[in-house]
Length: 250
Image (cartoon, rainbow, N blue to C red):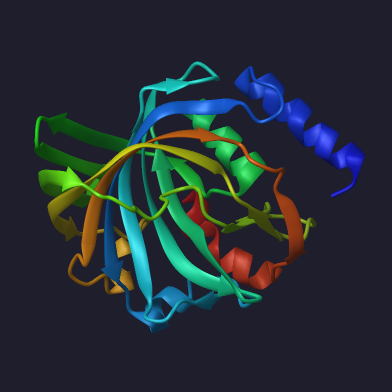
């Protein structure tokens, strides 16, 4: 990315977030996550051709709560990461996400290619008990319920890993594959025993991914900052993007 483009990114992000030079955007962000196997044939349709599913094929489903953000919104989020490889790099790609705040929706979609839509998210943490659900347009999409246990000594990152997201819009513009890696500062990570039920709906067909039993679950509490600016690293087929449009915006 040339200097002018990078400056433009930080200028926009700074105006949105009230920070400069990649300061904290979120403090004590909570992510309740479940790592699950996924049907590779079904998941393949949710990814652009340039990305390859990790082996074995797996996904991370999550509920999140952001009690403090630098742009003044406290909100909740639910999403899915598919674990992928791109040119030898292990990364995650977000093909589906909902939030309950319009500022977070616009910022995430326009700057970072997260396919955010408005929905309803609940997440309750009461001592060692956790429960939550994600729903949209009157349909319950998935639920999580369980208990927390001890700290994870060497946890994997939840957001602070390479991302490959698609940013684009219907029309003449060619969709772009973005590469970026947020900065993550761990506050705590606890193990969880979770029961996850995925129902999905016609407009949010999570149930079609063939998600299997939970292999590992955790509660991450982290501080997040922007890291380097997102870099367009390739074009994405407009035909694939059109086929994904209802999933991303319907």
